[in-house]
Length: 168
Image (tube, rainbow, N blue to C red):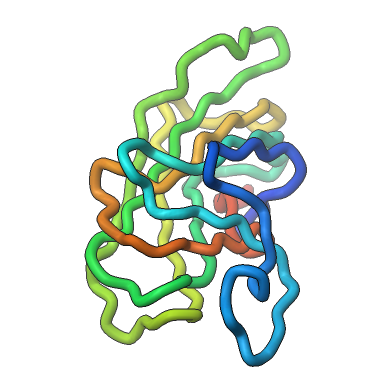
């Protein structure tokens, strides 16, 4: 078994306030980085993030999680909280169904982290039933307003963040 990660691409819809940008447009960098990021600002009263979908890979075996990897835009302090909700559908299933219960993760220890540094936090996904290869997986990915007390942006890297799993 190996671990694989599907990066965020294509079918992404952003909540108000969340938007695609570039690192050099969001930070005052001495050395320009024109790589794409998804700006996830601090939540102020409700969860804030994006929704995406993709096909569960044919080699999917187990261990689903969502990995938030990006750059801290500001001095980290307090609690950084994230959440993910999922919905798996087959070809004949209606998509008019509620997302499953949320899975969350958070961090409040920032020793060794500073502004403009990369950071990673994973959310272990607990689907109601085992995921099935070939089906569509809808994800709602967000900063969790119920625990997140950061006041800074998180610049999610869509190329290194995403759905992680072990293969068959």
